[in-house]
Length: 387
Image (cartoon, rainbow, N blue to C red; front, top):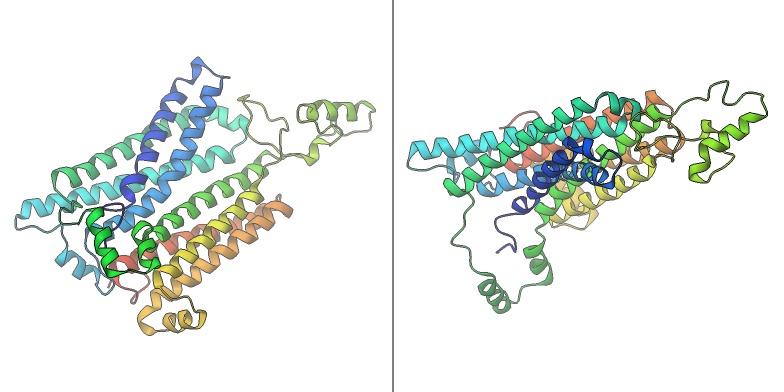
């Protein structure tokens, strides 16, 4: 079956982080020219969206490697390496291909991790700490841009110089449509040509991680920026309420004590005055929805929609990795709901937030690792290493 996008979605998704992070960083470096303008805010939005889009680009890259290496469900990693399209009669070409792949994966993984961390720290910090760490953030972004650009260069070398992922024998779309018409393919098969289930699953998994990152950062922001009112703010003086009204006048919520407000981004680099409520709980709920969509796409990859049949398949001794993958996936969905509840009603409980945030990070890391194992080394075997 011919996919509509050849060779895979990774070639599309990689352009967003490359362009957005690079341009946004350039704007931030030159921001001293327009410290209060909307152009600087636009540059920061570019950095945010670019950094988040790097995560699904990375997860789609896992599928891309699975695709170009020619991995099959019943192959171990040893088998994949032996029969891979990367191998050539010329040993130097083989070594160059594997070397470019290794460098591409390492550099872009490091860039994605660096961008994710800068987003987490930036959103989580108060405005005062953002101002203090501004130079560090700029250097951090420059290093990330260097990593992602270098990784992209190795990817280009791998494809355009060494010929990996080039598929000249794939029929044209017109020829495929004619063949489909003659074969009278069902609707599901036609849909899969445009939306391959596995690619959808790994891409949505990346967006789940991205949304969880933003949600966690907002939850940290709500804690770090919230403050208990000082005595002079809410004392017994008749002028205290007037003072509270003056602080909140910009948002129109006159009369609400500062103690009941939280802090979010301000254009003033050292301003920690109350602005608006941080919507961490809402973002956790959005993360839950994306995680559920990822789970549905995962079920689609199995091609089984009956719950009993799914459980029978997972109980098979040859699918122990798949079973654990499903269990961890359910755990991630539950954790997003718990964190949404904490963000809404237990926002100042730092201990509980820390515990469940760590559990979420561990679950995501385990889920990615299990996905890699199943893509390149069958659905059964050790959970900690390749067969």
